[in-house]
Length: 360
Image 1 (cartoon, rainbow, N blue to C red):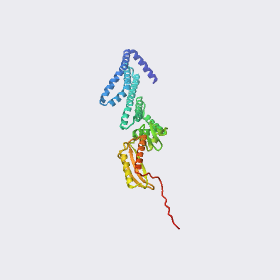
Image 2 (tube, helix red, strand yellow):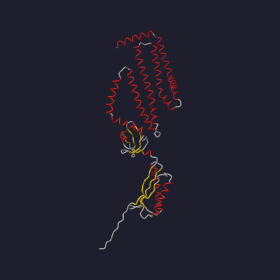
Image 3 (cartoon, one colour):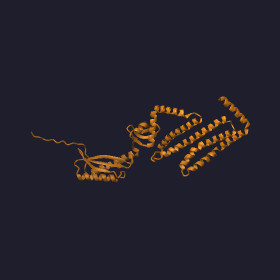
Image 4 (tube, rainbow, N blue to C red):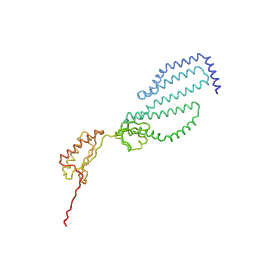
């Protein structure tokens, strides 16, 4: 086989010596393609872009995906045409032809890989609440997976072009993949957990969440884990598989904050005074600028052991914790003023002891 190749090279040398004009023509074609490759790239991109008229975002994504690969392809095409004009023997030109086909396959894979971030961004943007940073993480995550798939398919086609039987290779890859999946089960579980977080969006970067194991603000979401800064200002790295398996409370998704408590008045409060206190507290809450008018509950709930219990519930418009504390303080002050104005008092836990005096 080596001897045949050497003979072919000798024949090629003789051909080159006898066909100098063809060689010069081939070099000229290559140089022309090299000089005008950028121009050809612009023409090709402009022609393809016309199919996406009116869809500017898609058009821009296509232009970005084609720009780099098309320039390389036209230079490669110039070299291929140059070699074909030289008139090389089939045994010498055949590997060049194979390399050109392989190069074409890889460039197509390159174009698809560059287009993947745009495709994944369209999928993620279906949820308008998605945080910008979290959206970037999701796009990168999905795009990388799709790129691996694209280049894997391209690799299999390249191997087939080289003349190898891909059936045995696919069987080997399947067995190797099974072995790898068993060895990296935990990592794979975390990756799928990250995929679930990104697609289901139980939280975004910047949200404050609470689970049975952690309470804090989400700082970053990666393929393997989620970084959370706790209330104590420490950072906890939680595997995605653990996080997605727990119930998650997302405090940042609240639209309003509920306040629910009781006040207790003494038993010597008259029915008239009790009714007045209830009405004034309800009116004060409904007129308060930081309280939702709907959802206010003020009622005489029960007779407890040492007090008359009034149940109070309302919703504050803000979800900011520090602001809600200030609003609650203002409302509590108003309730105290109402109770004092009606000359009644808050009850303290107490008990009455009755002594029966029996004369012997």
